Each structure stands twice: as structure tokens, then as C-alpha cells.
Image (cartoon, rainbow, N blue to C red; front, side, top):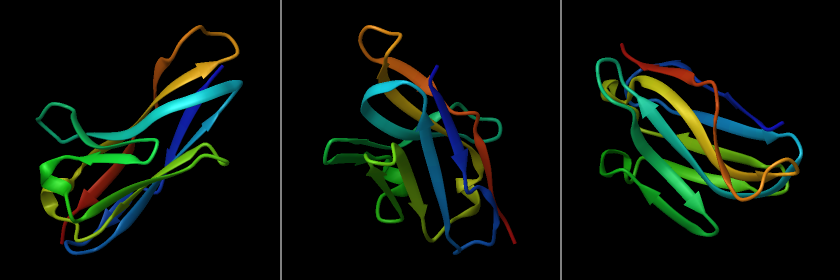
Length: 120
């Protein structure tokens, strides 16, 4: 069984920073892409950032402010969020494509979500 567990959300004032973590656990054979999505209130879920190998991609709204990284040995992805704005307020979800001992091919997994609130 594979699990993704996020941490690091919370409340921060505009201009502040937060760092999210996503740790994968279970009988993991291989992790392909890892990424972060967010679900703002009243809006649809959207891609924030994704990392695959050494390649990263970001939503235009977070470019230059957010940085995604990954520690393969720890099976953990990070999202460093700087210069946060009220419009960054959302539930942030970790996503990963993982092959486990029980599956054939890569399966899409989601974390439980962590709330990020940016307000004064």
C-alpha cells in the first residue's frame, strides 16, 4: 500500500513563506513524476508545479515565487513558497506516479491535502 503524506501548511501573512513536504511511503518500486496541485475556494483544482527527473514546470501564477524540489532517497517532494499572496490560499495536494510491489505500471496517488491560508 502506498501513501502520500503532506505537511507544512498553515497561515501566513502576504509576502511570507511556507514550505510544504510530501513523503511517499509503502512498498514503492519506482516514483516517476511528483507534483503539487491546489484547490482554491470556489474554483477548480489546478496544477501548481511538477518535477520529473531534473525537469520542472510551474503554473504561470507561481513562476519566480515557488520552487519544487525532490529528495529521491527520502521519497519526498517539497514546495518552497515565497512572496505568498492571498490568491495562493487553497488546499494543496501532493500527487505522484508510483509503481509499487502490488501494481503493474505507474499509478496516480494523491495526498490528503494541506490548507494554506494567506491573509493579513
